[in-house]
View 1 (cartoon, rainbow, N blue to C red):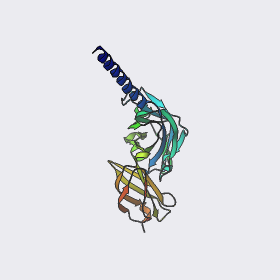
View 2 (view 1 turned 45 degrees about the vertical axis):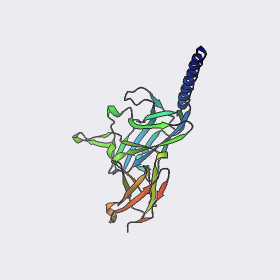
View 3 (view 1 turned 120 degrees about the vertical axis):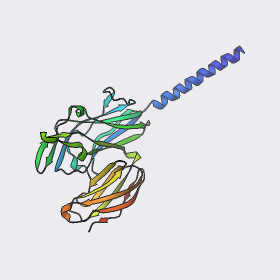
View 4 (view 1 turned 90 degrees about the horizontal axis):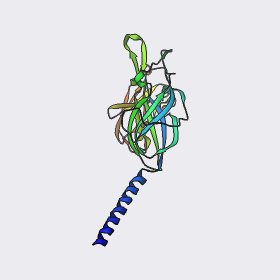
Length: 265
């Protein structure tokens, strides 16, 4: 009995050690993270923002200011967000190694050199004090060891620029949608005729995701969840052309669905 008791205790210790070892090993290792910035269209001439940092918070879903880690931003500087449409984006973080685990939040930190151009006139964009440390974007994605992840930050300009009543101030309150490229799909295509401004949009949950066609009429809508979408193709009013709706476009994870050429004439 004494022998059996000792053996049982030894087995329990070994089992406990094995479980602890498995728990620790599952949390060990590193993951690779990349971050790209893109934009939804807006009715401005230009919207310039200064990107100075991208931060993340791992294994911490709290709202306090502790635990933020800066990433190695390779392309800091001032960008015209309205250039980042039609599938064009800028790579901010490239395969940066971080500990594997729960990625709870991403923060895009902007500098003070932000402005908007309307009807040929440039206005400074004021950043409220609550936003000066950067916008917190909830992500809550589990990062597995030895896997590369690419996050898309979709800067929703139309909702981010706020004209403050009669004061004349124009405030920048960033609204950004984050999506994981590996967990989403895309829709691409071409709209004719070329040479006019055309907006292509669809609804994702409670948000409108949109982009402009390029000079050849090409477009790409990225960061779309798997499902079926209706596209609204809206030409500029001065073209005299009517909008077009394309229904039931299927999107699957990790793939780009290419629609037939849409002719507005």
